Image (cartoon, rainbow, N blue to C red; front, side):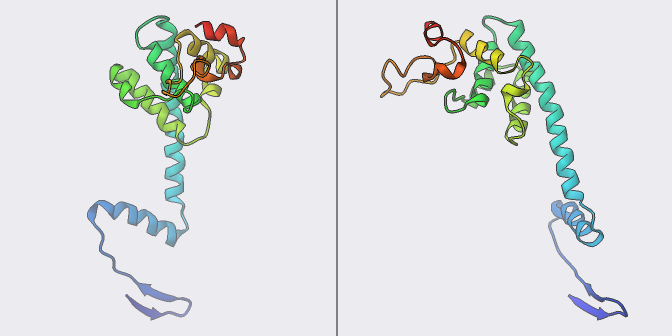
Length: 175
């Protein structure tokens, strides 16, 4: 590193060596420092906006598949996926189960999961029918918390907490 004096500012010359695959990132960071531009922040904002756009479309694809296939097909699996986003503790979901879906539906789930991880919105608030529809689907497909060996019969009832569903607990246990 060399420096020289000018009438207004001290000038510093810097030479860097970086791997070629990091050249563009260094260039953007350098411009951000020198020019005061906020390129990385703008890129992040664009990425979040793009993820949100893909997520909205993905959720429409998932909802359509669930509504079209009332019984059987991928609807139960898709409902289990949405239930896990709604409450992962009560409705754990094994992501390897996405292998059972066709490419379009699996990608829709991954696109929505990518957006959901940002914590910008809750799935029940994004669904066309909201939380009540999600709860109906969960009951319809019998999505339940897996039973631990120490669970008592009372704990094995639907999710262990039917009051959170806003429905009559006895009715929910029948399904």
